[in-house]
Length: 186
Image (cartoon, rainbow, N blue to C red; front, top):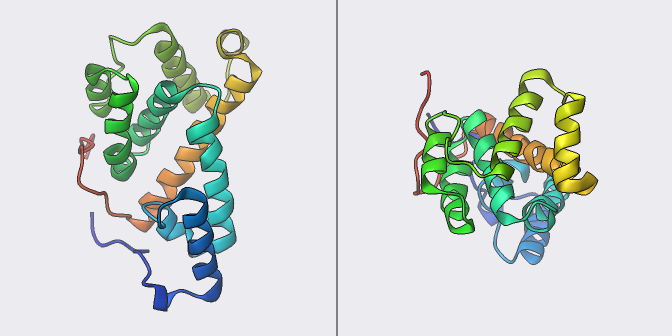
């Protein structure tokens, strides 16, 4: 992959709106702008709205940390997104996603050792991505297991991380040191 198209901006190169958004981001997150938020900073209001959505999807969704990190890995693999993978593979492992599951996802395989919740999420997202909707049976299974809020949080978390993946893939955002997402088909 070639150079980062929308790299971090030095403070002196930021517009007033970008600087204000960077300050608001740091106040909300407790860390400076990083990763996917550098390209998003070029649209300051959008970046702040995306960041707010991300707080819910990452920290307050009904699935809990382990399953939301599992979702993030599935999205990172589907979108071939190395930064998401480098950041979230270690977090997923610490949250309880098995190393063999992480490896299998990275290598583009359906993990064998998934628990029932992981298997349901894996299959539900595979169906959503293949058909752009769920069958009544899948909808019922996901709703029965996670409730209506969990169902919506599942779809929204996958969509949120897909948005970030697409932004970073277009911007060619550089991945930090960390686990490397294997290249598939290319």
